[in-house]
Length: 233
Image (cartoon, rainbow, N blue to C red; front, side):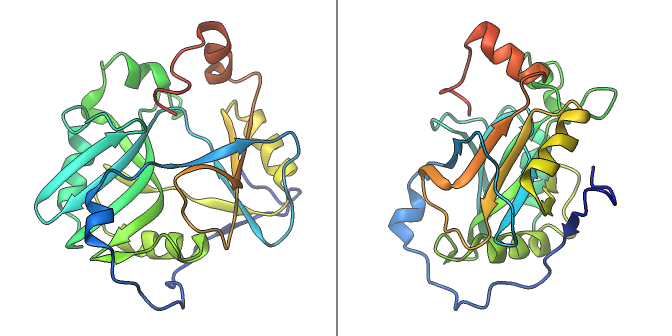
């Protein structure tokens, strides 16, 4: 998506945050963690303090691994473990003892674009994979207070040798409006802009901003059906 005219750079952070690891609160992390949610905006940010991610058209999933046990949860806390075997298999094979990953469960159409209907109607459950964009816990360390930039760096390292069921969601730096225009040209749902130094907080956050492409099939579907806005996203 990024071009020379856009002057954006795909960022691959390969070092973990410099902040000291924190021992996770066992009781807090045993409970279901509600996802961090982006706030709507009509003006996207620019500058070095932000990164921008593609907003994929799928089901929001919190993926949890504890030893040999794997569980997948939807945004409202429904158990989706039985739905997505490829994600479960890949998560179970990660070398980490435990982890909690935030991402979007998606399936791609013949053009490589994520298709909500392929997930929704369950004709492609075996091929649904996770675009992972945040790391909440790793090997007992609660990472929610670490900056996003560090969490994503650690996530990329964690997924470096993962199977096809979990893929690191790349991000782009630069002017948010420019990134959004490129996303629209590709027919994508939109983008989410996030502060690099933001912590992970359950619920709606002003540190995560979303803008949707009004011409994208996903946005048109939501407008026509008024379906699932609070159930899955």
